Image 1: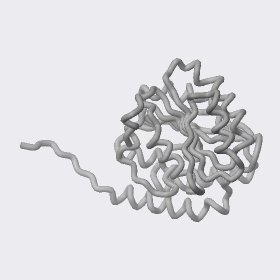
Image 2: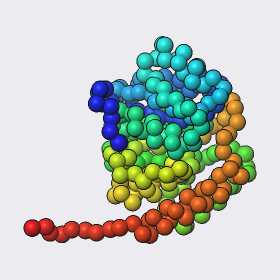
Image 3: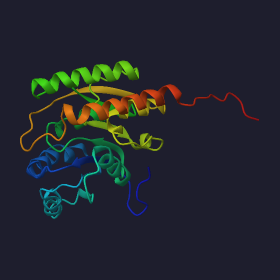
Image 4: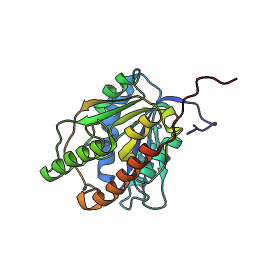
Length: 244
């Protein structure tokens, strides 16, 4: 992944997929503005509109008039969260890239907790240890994480948490596929990057509805898991000890 040659690199990029989140955008910007300026870093916020139909992109355009830190990438249609993340990563100029959801269930105030660990680790994953979700969603997520960890030989407690921090080098060798955002820690460990997790807060959704549920994730997540399991087992490895 390369940054734009026409624009200087920054310390931090916050990449946020947007899909029909118009009512959350103003409080999201306010929360980001409460945290990011105090970091004393050069930063940007990359908002990737994934084919919203509720006027999200138009509102972002209005917000940009008084906030030059905001950038907008707009898809022609809904391509999914993995595509939105990758478009954001490709456009990002930060040496560190933080991802989060737009619904404010992830708290921007937790971003410093992730950044504290980026000096030691390449990838820092948020862990929603006390979730504010309906009980069925909590149970299904717990089961899904347990199955995913068992079959992929992983130890991350909450791979579904979008609040993560990455060194930008992590995205260079990344295998691209739809659904890959659920496996960022595993995929990056496979490339030799170091991964850790930190406990973060989790809030109830204020506006709108969740775009993901058990029915629309179960089969696709299972297929992706089998693919990652196969890739991990069949990945080509070698270690050169001498070359003359």
